Image (cartoon, one colour):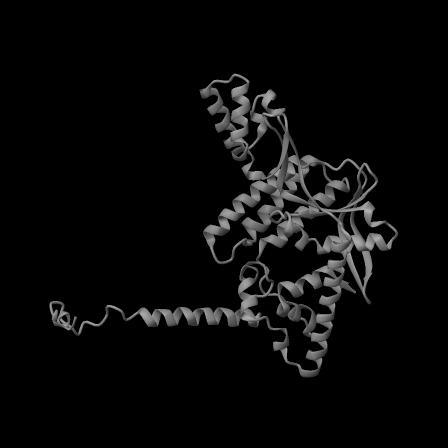
Length: 371
């Protein structure tokens, strides 16, 4: 049976799909030192243990600290394999974001089903998958939730990334649930929704990266501190503590009450057009794979699975940091890197000799007579 990971793999890298699913025997990955997949797995496991009543909320942070130490400190997995400084900066933010989530997670207080296995027929093929979390809201809607440790999706980006959630919605629909009773959402673990009380009485919800909450709320907090009669010195002191501690709990209770914090859920409207788009996308992708597999069986020409140089360029960050195959095995990526090196060498050769010709004497200015 097909899965979303196979469909998505094609769009990340055709050649990676070839190595994973077409070659026989399968080519073993040689580049699995990216921490993104591991930390995502750690977070999923902790949430599953918590909602299965295996650990308490307080133990969630202990589990995270242990998992982080194993992945980052002991195994030395990388967020960025090419840039040590960038890797350390990403790691610091990532750590504080997830640490804050497990300390402040808004617990789902309704019945919840975890890692639910589903199958669905789309076109002439069958697909399978596991829903991270499935629950019902107060209006009786089935809510499909995907725990996400990536950067937040909003607007068009969210519509372009919700294929897996839509596939799960199709599965529920085939089980008899009307589409108008299904909701799809991500819980972005690195962010927190904060409902902010404005001076005019209105309320505004902001999605704030968890490690930046204190800094992001300073301007609004200053307004409320002044409104409550705090002096300039007292206000500045509170704001400095807010920034250092990254928590509204350091503020006076009257100011704390201006904020309401919750997990960062992003919903995508499950419209007929969106469902049709992803159904067509899945069917078309599967057809492409089937055709390429047939062509490869006839010709044994693996270049059928090569991405163009332009495609590799667009996905260069993925190949450098997320792809499970290094350039040693991923031939299109290797070719791209070799061409980059050639361009670099050519530029160096072109300009390398400038200023090196000392055949003319420094004080020979006869060439000026030619002007």
